[in-house]
Image (cartoon, rainbow, N blue to C red; front, side, top):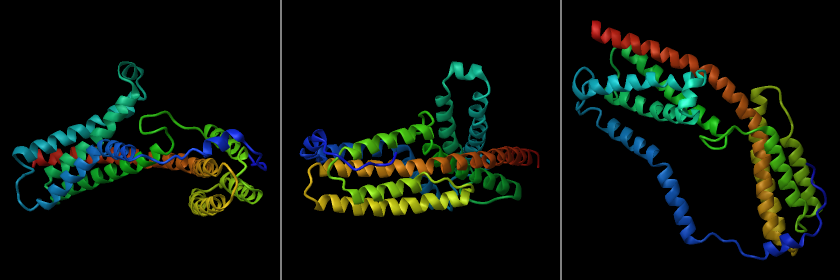
Length: 295
């Protein structure tokens, strides 16, 4: 993957001469798509803010009426979360419904269920057993959000297939070829990129050194990118626009290569933590329901 001294590339030079600026309608369309795709999250946040601000109005009671129904429904939805891990072990379930839909249901109910429980409790603490059940639920919900973030960094989107380190390296190699074919990249920039590439491919044994390595690489790569782009833009060589895009893409790919191994290890550690928390939540919820209805 080492970058060689570049040679002139008339195709890239021709493409670079064409201006590439984002149109205003394009920006508006991207903002609209981003808003729509995050509409559910924004609605949940607004609902939680409403519930928190009105927690002292006593409009819900955990023992009767809507508050009681919310508690039973929310607890039932949390039990339904077991269908996703079960679907990965029962072939019949995945033949009937693809596993990505089980996963989507798991993600949806993992948010809706805790929100119902929070409204059931009216955002207040209660008895000891209910407090333990609530804390366990919040830990599981928080763990799920962390897991979701890690998951999206080792998969192609939330419902896409899993990435591979080999594929990322292949993409980085392709980006390298694009760079090596542009005359706007000088020998000094080549040396800087080669040095950064060596850092990106360096392997560390422990999780803490690996995290520190990724953090340092993220900072140094952005500094190097800024410096190289400044040099390219100040030069008189043709193909500067394409060279700038290639540098940005290559830097991004190197960061992905370095971070992928770390995210994979974090996801394995997250699984070890998340599953016991989930079962602890189920057990404490059952104890809470039993205590409420018996005593």
